[in-house]
Length: 268
Image (cartoon, rainbow, N blue to C red; front, side):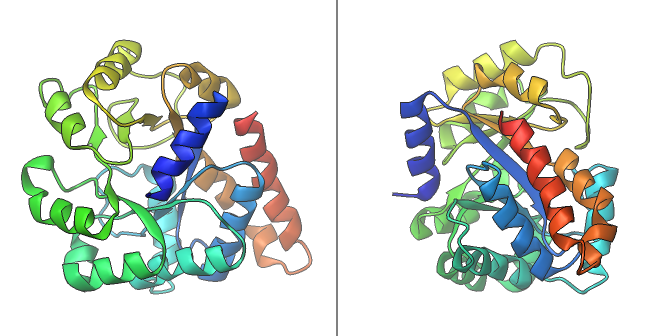
């Protein structure tokens, strides 16, 4: 069984909602990414999105763009990002990992090599925001073969495409709570509740909601409506805030503790 399915099954049995943090790999460096992943698991993360830094992102707001720029200064590659999953697992981070990448780095690596790597390094899921359902047949077939879930995004503007996207979904459906790029928000799409309900009715897999969620109150708002809540920009911004601590060997643990406390508060 794919570990994403296993975790959602366990959470459903206990009446809990998955907390799914997103972080950018290599921000500020690979070793620190492994330490941050361990910290997220200790703080209550149920699964983690590993973001591949990309120079021309489609969906990322300014916070994640800055994180990608910091990572790319160190020439972080998609292969480095995939390796983090194994390193973190060896360091004791026993949760499902979902690779969040744009399609171009995958193509440059080659599909066969890509799937060989993510399978061997323990990746459970894939999110590729710039690969539309109309063009994902080859990727979907290879993912199915490898036992890896290709997780689709649906937005409030998806309308008649929701049923088609949800019908093909594996792992969970990533429901975009707001229009535009990622980033911390105080307001969500006006019809968010109806939108989530429509996805729920169309999908045979769990649904998770993300984009703009940054507080325990916002997490609680969606706990009754979704099986998982994804928090990205707010955690990446917290990492950005503590970069000086992470860079100081004498205060590194203090920086990691700040990240732990923030994520632990989200979990509640």
